[in-house]
Image (cartoon, rainbow, N blue to C red):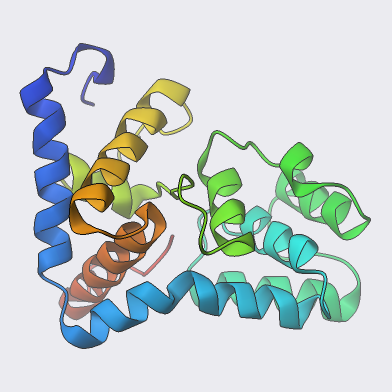
Amino acid sequence: MINMKTLTPEEREQFVINIMDEYAKASPDQLARGRAWYLTAHQLADMISEGNVMAGAGVIAALSAQKSWAENSRLASRAFESGAPSGHTGETLAKAAKIMAGADPAVVLPMTAKTGNFYRCILDPEDAEAVCIDRHAHDIAVGETYGSRDRGLSAKTRYAVVAHAYREAAMRLGELPSTVQAVTWVVRTEGIAGTATRPKNR
């Protein structure tokens, strides 16, 4: 695992270059879908919660860990349809249940980590700071596929360094950080799916 605390300016710059290189691989269709990704997720949050976007986005984010987007969407939709979340770990279900009961997702979710930032991106697709660093985003930035190895993204410093690289890449590309992350996510997951080596989990 790369020690983020000892990175040189050149190594940090390489993260930005890696992200921009992945972004440049996007086809016009992938670019369009990546740019619309969080708007589409926002619309889903609005629909499944019958207008309570904050709750919808919070439940989607809470149930996102180690799930494909298709499964994540299904679990969140089913939670609102049935009135109770299911299909995940106990701790995760407890968070989703609290949000469905009216708790502020910003209080329930870890806002400096992936799920908190995922929530922010879904809640406000125009958020200029939030960036969801999942395993794909991490691997793109560091230029290495970690597979099942721990990426250490629960550490605030590590998450922040990778998130900063996306913000820097976004500034240079004239896009929102969440857009750059979404476009590169589309490119990476569809590339992986094409090799039939890994599922498309967030």
